[in-house]
Image 1 (cartoon, helix red, strand yellow):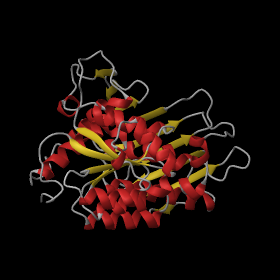
Image 2: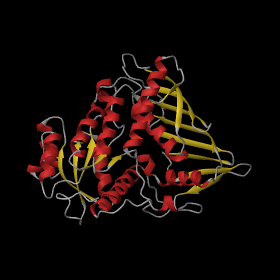
Image 3: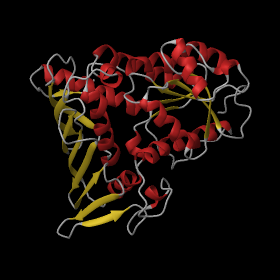
Image 4: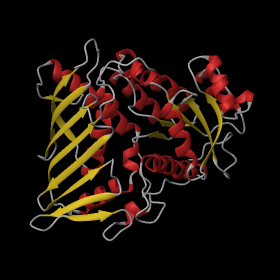
Length: 387
């Protein structure tokens, strides 16, 4: 159903607002670039910082009109909802503890939400946000950007087609080194503060990405897990390393390793999926290649846009084979999938079946995963079910 009033103008780029993402915020710049790559959005408003002064300065630097730069997200949601040319969608790129309250303000006013992951900092807030999203006419999109990579889509298509047979094993890891020592900077500060990040450190920050891509590609649903979490850096209040064993419905087994204290690793997200008839391997740091090994046959390299690459990868690719696509393009694919859905809503049409993006339910599963990891580790890595 089309949302009336503010969205009567169904033509042109989607009018986008942003909460968080000011001058000194890395991820805000990433979201803005991603929204512009396919010319589907125009940033027109923002509450860009937790302080009015920083928000005003950031908005001015981005060229926003002075009356569309807001001191806080609630003020922004109220006024933008009343404007005929107000925002149609908002990107929420704040620390985790702000996600629920900010998203709720826009959802209840019919403004589509594109939210950074994880969904929220607590399981209670995640459940409340799911309820808010289900009550709203607006869409909720979660930016698990690695699901936007063409070869991740290729792997998912191959699993779903039965190329690997019944899935038996899933191995996934996301490993970094940047928190090997205590650091005094904004990015490290909030990520290692449980009041802002939530109870999970590396599990919430990058473990949720690993869990999400494993679930996205394999199509499996997690049944239970056993987690051993560590905070190796003295004084750190959240985990910086985690080893997780997983049992999936249907009998498949998995292992997940997330770490931010592994020297020599930058953003090493790797996924392996093995079935009765073959296996797949994909690495985010070399994202245009997918290794496929049919059982008993030589390993085969499938390249983005090359021989063996299918329709799901092709529809989210922009440049010819051999020209790398990666992080920003994967992020942009999530934004463009969201744009397809929003523009369908503009016209009162159903969202096309081929449009794929992480939803609020995917976000809930991620927060449930973190909660289960923390509970399990406190019980000496006991097996626990998701909430």
